[in-house]
Image (cartoon, rainbow, N blue to C red; front, side):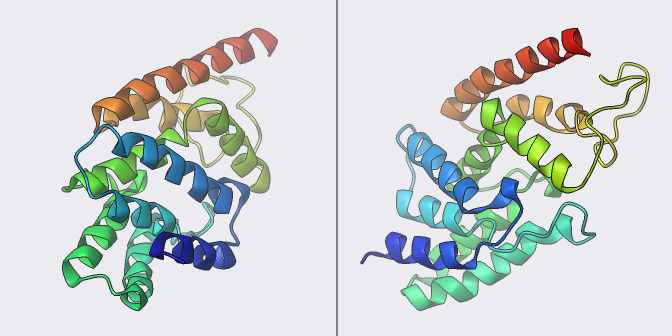
Amino acid sequence: MNVIDSLKNEIKEMMDNDPAHDFEHIMRVYKNAQKLCKQEKVNKKLVLCATLLHDVVSYPKSDNRSKNSSIESAKKSKTILKKYNFSKEEIIIISDAIRDHSFSQNKIPVTIEGKILQDADRLDALGAIGIARVFATGGSLKRPLYNIDDPFCKSRNVNDKVWTVDHFYQKLLKLESLMNTKSGKIEAKKRTKVLKEFLRQLRQEI
């Protein structure tokens, strides 16, 4: 069994997260990364290892430690990777990519490996699957779907800690402009159209 398959099996046994950050999320990000790697000059093995490990520590969004999930995942990834005979340099590339990928950290990764991981992860927050994840998270936290007086944040401050639809304005609609790679930008544009169409339809229904 190769390193990638061994890591997949190890991570699958470890994942016990909310529906938006489960092993299926990991594998969708993995698939996104595979596609992005085809368009970029990059060490594919390091990118794919980073995708498998990027949420190995994932605190619930309601937890004060949530913003530090990527930092903790980076630390834990180093311990895991040492079992697989990666060089110090490779472990640094992978762990730095994981540390810097998170939206809440507000960082742009330095390496192309980190940029691809960040793009691949952000793509899973867009499109139909992104919509599904938003409401899965909102439901698990028992948040109302939207603010009944101003559902689409026309004249109030956005607060996605209270209303689920606010997350579109707090984060999701911003992601397209924050993508790092050309192929990531193209795919993000397609998926963002899905978000905008959903909001248009929602506006008609409520």
